[in-house]
Amino acid sequence: MKKLLALVLALVMVLAATSAFADGLLKIGYVQVGHESDWRMANTQNYYDVFTKEAGFELELIDCDNDHALQLAKVREFVQKDFDYIVIDPIQTAGWDDVLKEVQDAGIPCIIADRSVDASADLYTTAVGTDMTAEGETAGKWLAEYLNGKEAKILVIEGSTGSSAAIGRAEGFNKIAAEHPEWKIIDSQDGDFTQAGGQQVMESFIKTYGADGFDVVVCHNDNEAYGAMDAMDAAEIKYGVDGKIIISFDATKEGLTRTLNGQILCNVECNPIQAVIVMNVIKALQNNETVEKFTLVPDEGFCAPGITSEIVTTMTDEVLAGRKY
Ligand code: GZL
Image 1 (cartoon, helix red, strand yellow):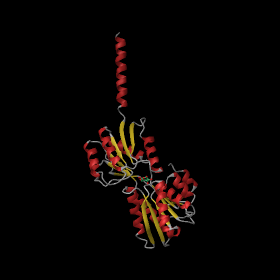
Image 2 (tube, protein in one colour):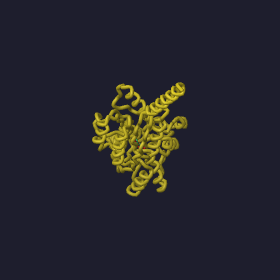
Image 3 (spheres, protein in one colour):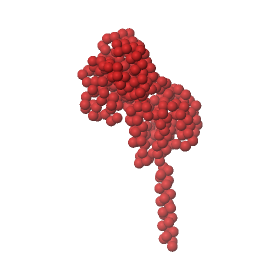
């Protein structure tokens, strides 16, 4: 009888320990922008690949469908669900102070990932992301190198209005454009980082300016560039080395494939593979280590074959083969 009791007791302890271990998973809430682009899907998949139960995490990722108000509401919902960490990729930079204060008052560490917010850095634990302004500058510097003093009429298909990606890329590109009076940015419209948006804006540009009214199209991401190509194909407008100059951002696998084949002449990377960096920041915080207020995710630029550049890497089959997303 005593042996049976001891066995039952041991079993109960093992079960308790097991359930305690299961409760040992770090609960991570990721409030994601949406599913607007290939970049975004790669970023989302990367979080699922990294924040696994085997790695000691329980991830809840919410797709906010590019809706800022919904994003604020979801962060507030997450505060009630006592996550160990809340990660936010902010659709737009403005309007975050109150909700970040609520997260802070709830004692939940908050990481701003990818895009940035117009809020005091005291309101969140740390941030991880790329330098979007530098990305815009890289595009401008490459164009200056490529045009080599030639005049150019430039159209811009912007990313989602109010997003730090659109703001930063415009800021960086315009800084270089200001050094080139021979350039003229004749129009700039929001394509919302989608292929449909890019096509719609390009169609309206073609209607307004005509095939001969522009020389360069700067697209704030690859999906907008694909849409712009769709519109130019329909209007039988050539692009590439002997046509309109298309500049894009993100450098996704498809975007670099179109750079390798000469459709896109310059593609500036914005690396979506950020989850490991965020995980390492979380681990450091778990170990009570001091973390930097901002961790930069490095990126680079690429141009089509046949173009020599000091600013970006010329695409080859090997470069494309080495790309992860
Ligand atoms: C940039 C990221 C942007 C991408 C787009 O860091 O936030 O959002 O450039 C995506 O493709 O939609």
